[in-house]
Every structure is written in structure tokens, then in C-alpha cells.
View (tube, rainbow, N blue to C red):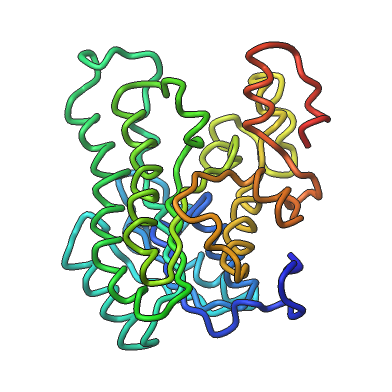
Length: 309
């Protein structure tokens, strides 16, 4: 991606980022794109080459993410971390402080609750343990991480916090799957709003950011396709026509981090498609999908997907 605000192709050289939840999907791509822009990126998660998390996937690890960050042109540092464990998160932040003395970008992308997602189940019919676990993974982790990392981030003005979620504030006026999922994915939006209030005096910015219909590794596996032939899944799920690769949201975060005027976004809920229009970046295939625009248009008609790419 070419920065629209600086002449160098490494606008984040010297910047230190923490991507919490960078094992796969959006988190991995965000870490890699920050690295491509020159940042040093600490990547965390529970799946390593010697240990697998409850998600049950051993095909993606934080070590591999760190290597991809370095290969992209940055410096990747893998730190195994369970973000529900306060001591581990505190140790992570202390390590960043000890090794770098600063933190410029915090991306809160911890999730890992896909295996708990249900559709159309009444609140009282959801397994309570599963529902509460979803809130732990998608909300409590974010609170613990922000609480530990923000004292380091606010040492220098210009810091950026990105709360990654599913859906914009405008789109999420619609009910999202179940009460527990709805809470888990709306909470980061309100968290970004609250953090933006608290961070403003320190000259820092907080936003919520959502990808569109994300072609994560798990999603591709679910539909039995790979990135190279993802369009084969459209026959099963027509909405997949507007999907985007994780690279797209990764470029969105890198563009935000490189923008000296990013404070104008403070407290806002943003999407990768929205920021692509603002900053002029494309997805890996050269398209510029507007997933939420397309999905909303589907509610009242039969839009042409070509008009939203």
C-alpha cells in the first residue's frame, strides 16, 4: 500500500504496535500490514507451535504471524498470551516497555469465539456457559488488555487504539444472531467510544473497526475453498460475492496508523470499505469491496455486486 500522507513506503518505521489476537484472520493480516509499513509488531495469541487453543486449529500460529510480519518488512515478535489472564497481559506490556519503551498502536482483535456462535437461538435456549464464554473472549479480554496497555500508549501523543469487531454501529442497530453475540460485537464499539473520550486529553485516538464479509482461514475452510478459488463458494452463499480478504482490513489499520490526522476519527465506528474510499487502498485482488453497503442494499432490492466492488 502506498501511504497517502507520506512519501516513504515505510511510514511506520520506528513505531511499536501490539496486535492482540494475531494468530489468524483479521489480526494476522493487520499485523502483517503494519509490518509492511515498517512497524515493529508484537503479536499475541494462544495457539503456538507447541500448544493449540480451544479454537482447535493448529494450522496458524503466532510464530508464523511474526515471521510474516518480518518478511513483509517490519519486525515481528511473537508472545504467547492468554488475554483473560491478567498476569500474562501485564507481563506482555512490561516486556514491550522494557524492550521498546513505548507503544504507538494497540489493536484489540482478541476473539476466538467462532465455535460458540449460534444463529436464531433464543437467549434462554443458548447454553449459558457458552454464552458467557463468548463474552469473556470478546469483551473481557479487550478490557483487560486496554487497562494494561494504555498507560504505556499514552506516554506519547498520537497513539492509536483499534477495537476490532463485527459490524458498524449503524449496521448493528439490527439484531446480531443471539443476545450473547449481539453483546459481544457491540461492546467493542462502545469501548472505542469510551476510550476515545478518556484518551483525547493525551492526544490519542480510539476507533472501532469492522471488516466486511471476511474470508478468514476458518471461513474458507468452512466453505471448502481457498483464497485462489473463493468464488466457488458463491453458489452456496450468494452474499459471499461481496467478501473481502483479511488484507483489506489490514490495510485499513495501516492507513489509519500512518495518518497524522487520524484524530478526526476519534470515538467513531468504521469499516474497511469506508476507509478504503478515504485512503485509496484496495484489497489483495485489486478490488474495493463495500460489504455493508451491499448487504444493506440487499434488504430492499437486488443490487449488482459489481457496483459495490
